[in-house]
Amino acid sequence: MNSRTALGAALLLSGVFLFWNRGMTYDAGDILSTYWASLFIIPLGIFFHWLYFGPLRGRGAGVLVPGGILLTVGIVCQISQLYDLWHVLWPGFILAPAAGLFELYWFGGRNRWLLIPIYILTAFSLIFFFVFSFGWLLSFLAARPYIGILMAVIGALLLIKGRN
Image (cartoon, rainbow, N blue to C red; front, side, top):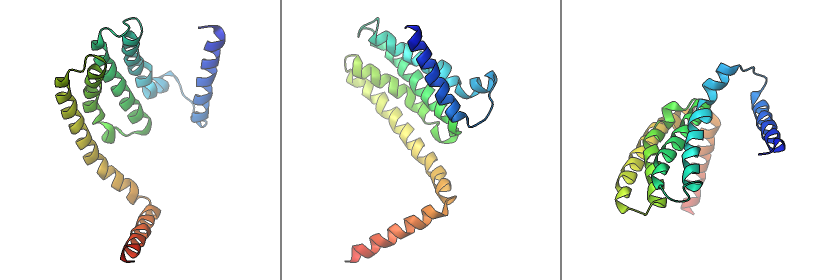
């Protein structure tokens, strides 16, 4: 990587950070406590994917399992940390091994027996996600009365048009 590319990437990331900053001051502890997943977990997951698609050149699909797990966990943790959605996104931790196993299935010979744990883990994750996010969604919508009014108007219009 040449110096121009490194400088461009640094300026781009700094500009995005300053745009999102909104006048708040940060020290090293604030940055580490907010972006720890993007700094440590996601790059490790990307590293395992780089190993498979780079030096291993399609051999050793087993490195995709920890890569998929770490990448999924890192994304869940980062979104949860940024938007304080731990109580909604925690089923992503159940989905993480399913993602890693699915990558092993997809790139590693299509062993159909891998689909059993993939389906089970994905189903549990989706069930828990819908159950726990439904209450959050209702409280989110209840705090905004205009959404309730809009839903009532749409429902009334559907009932009126249904009779014609």
